[in-house]
Length: 113
Image 1 (cartoon, one colour):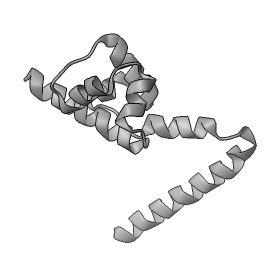
Image 2 (cartoon, one colour):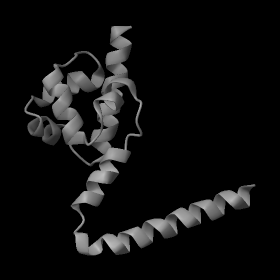
Image 3 (tube, rainbow, N blue to C red):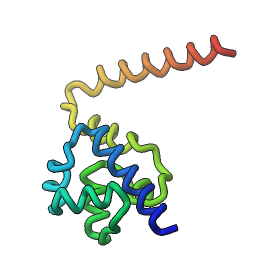
């Protein structure tokens, strides 16, 4: 069972790394481990320390719960991080875009009913 858990954790790490556009080498450098060790983690052949888990969580912008258990949407923390990086002068425009997008989704869902 431990191997299966490590494999699931590794899949989530890899998926989030790729969603953020990070190469394995870049992520490994950011969290101060070797790219070979990161590859072993992603493949589920090795576990990691709590320190590595925390650095992965922070760098990938996901919770440790998501990495360990898959209990959070993978992109939600990354989305909040992206929004935080947008200049405050543009927050009003971003809010309008997101509201329009939300209305479009709701309209499309209502048409399905």
